[in-house]
Structure formats: structure tokens, C-alpha cells
Image (cartoon, rainbow, N blue to C red; front, side, top):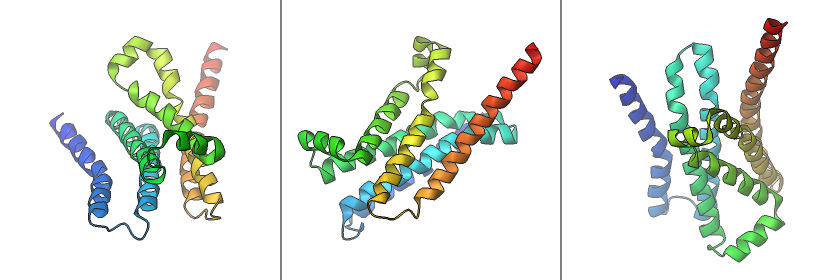
Length: 204
């Protein structure tokens, strides 16, 4: 148990490194000629990375037959939300000056902003119900059903990224994220179909 706690602390500290790096770089004017765009882009990238890592926990646990991997899933998911919140805040403050009227107009005008906004709302709901008390309040079945919407977040996040890059005709990184998340979603779908088939075989 002590070893697991030590590893979790290490993972926690590593997960903070990108935020610390961006904070120091911003303070030292090290984000290039357009620091606002650099912050928005970087926090968005780290949101996708942590989403991929969090979704990879279950396949990793099943493939390695090491159940302790599951203990990292909530923390990694919360770091995904943390970087998503930084991403949304960077956009709202640095790009829009926290002018809420302009932000709502932008959400309605640009589809990729709307898709990202919906993804962030769902992710916020998942983060708010990630504590064990929420599971007891909602009931295990409803809680599980709600948290399966993380796969909807994955689809929306890739769509947000793809739509944004389409405006610049630059898809260099998008396909990597799409392939990784597609593989993770495919693994989930395969497990669901396989388990459903096995249950029907047992009943039959």
C-alpha cells in the first residue's frame, strides 16, 4: 500500500509538470510571439493527452491483469478536467477578455467552439460526480451510466480539434489523437459485444 501511495504521489507531481512549465514560460515571456494562442493550444493538447491516458487505464488493467491500475483512473480523469478548465479559461480570458456576451456569440457562430463547450460541460459534470459520495447518492448503476459519457467527451474533443484544425488546413496531430481514442473506443465496444454474447450463450 505504501508503495502504491508513493507511485500515486509521483504521478500527481508529473501531471502538474506541464502546468508548471506553462506558468513559468508565461511569466518569462517564453511562449513565443503569440502567448495567448500558445497557452490555449498547449492546454488543449494536454487535455486530450490526459483523456487518452485516463481511457487507457481499463484496457491496461485488463491486458496486464493488474487491478491496481484502476486506482489511478480518477486522478488522471481529474487532471484531464484540470487542463480542460485551464484551456477554457485561457480562451475566455486571453482570447475573449471574459466578455460573456462575446463568448456566447462566439459559441453560436463557430461550431468547433460549440462542440468544445459541450464537451467541457459534460467533463465538468463527470468531475463533479467523481467523488465516492456521488456514487452513493446516484446509485451505482446510474453513476456508471453517467460516467460512460466520457466516451462522448472523447468523440466531441476530437471533433473540436478536427474542426479547429480544418480552418487552418492542418491535420498533423489530429489523426494521432483520433486513432488512439478510436482504438480505445473500439476496445470498449469489443468488450461490450463480447460480454453480451457470452451472457446470451450462458442463458441459452
